Image 1 (cartoon, helix red, strand yellow):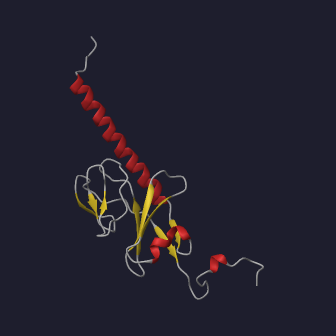
Image 2 (cartoon, rainbow, N blue to C red; image 1 turned 90 degrees about the horizontal axis):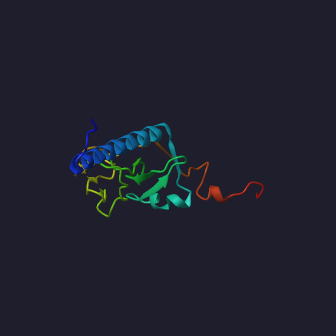
Image 3 (cartoon, rainbow, N blue to C red; image 1 turned 45 degrees about the vertical axis):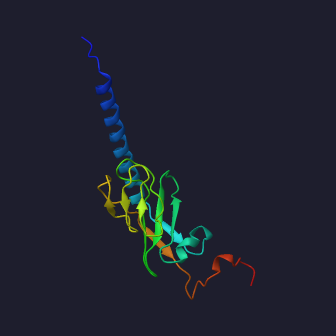
Length: 151
C-alpha cells in the first residue's frame, strides 16, 4: 500500500531537507576555510579599507563560493571569519558604523569579531586563519610598485 503525504507533511519534509542541506553546506564551507590560511597584503588596493581601524572588506578565497570578512580591530590586530550565517546559510553584511554585522535573512547580529550577539543564528561566524603582511623597514611602503631592473 502506497503512503500518501498530505501537503503539510510534504512541506515539513521539504523544510527539513532544506535545513539539513544548509547545515551540511555550512560544515563543508567551514572545513574548507579552516584548511586555508588567508594572506592579506596591506599594499594591495583591494584591502585599502583595512588601513584604518574598524575597516572591513569581503574577499572570496580561491576555490570557494562563500566570501570571508576581514576586519581591522586595532593597530595590530585583525580578524577574519566566514560571511555565511550559521542559522540558514545566508550571506551576512559587512559591519555597519556601529560595528554590527547583520544577517539580512532573519536578523541575527554579530560583533566585529564575528561573535553572535542575538537572533536565531545561536552561534558565532566561523573563524578563518589569517596572516597579514605589513610594510617594514626592509619592505617599505610602495614596495609592490618597484619593478626589478629599474634601479
